[in-house]
Length: 307
Ligand code: PGA
Image 1: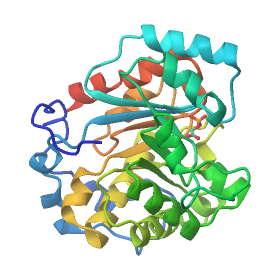
Image 2: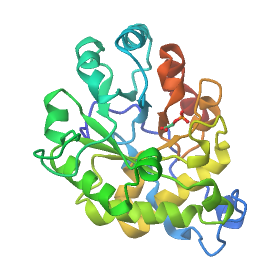
Image 3: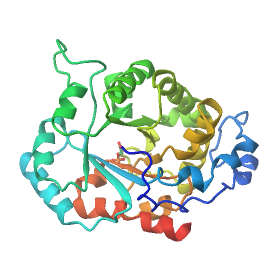
Image 4: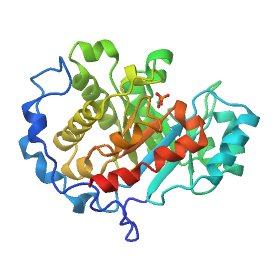
């Protein structure tokens, strides 16, 4: 993705020039969160609109997971093609591998295609895997890595995910880098600790954050209908940005999109989008319905009103 374009001014000003961190410093919206984790008071300076300008376009991804048939996907693509999408949002869908070609050949160019996973190195004798080179060959621009279903069901660990991200980036794919805590980790006050550990594994592996969107997806909110409250989500997004500032750079902290995922739907997206550090969404179930996905994309309008 182009990081800076002089014609891309839409998001300028959507984020205020400094974040109201004081409320986050004095109280935590996450019960049981480790109170030793505190935000840097000097962080305010990093959230300048100048740094966000032209790099922080709202981003909405639809993760179709292991759903769909040729017929249902034909219908979904047709609904997406006829949807009116706000122009100033990056929109991406991630079909199952076997349908990527069908989707690429029928979906409007307005929406980019992401894969849901990729192999950790160049393709070859790796039965059942799909290489980054193959994904590029069929027109993918993005790949989702570190999704909780791959971490917790398939068993991918932080380092393996970091290596996958590094390889995908080195070949020019954008990476939607997922992080997020399990319910028991949240209840044990380990939300930040888990997110920081997962972030560090990405940071240790990747040479640059230019083509990375971070998706904060609390695992207890994924597919459960139990969405994080806007303040719960915002609190972690601020913490993630603060971690980037301290451990990567102020510039990366300011310009990296941090999107929220976990039971986002057409009814709750507007309130979430109003949160200053929520730069978009990664949507599972609701992305299988074209009109509802369009509503979520268009929630950028509530962000503009909130700004
Ligand atoms: P959900 O999934 O929207 O169905 O909760 C989100 C995700 O897994 O990315």
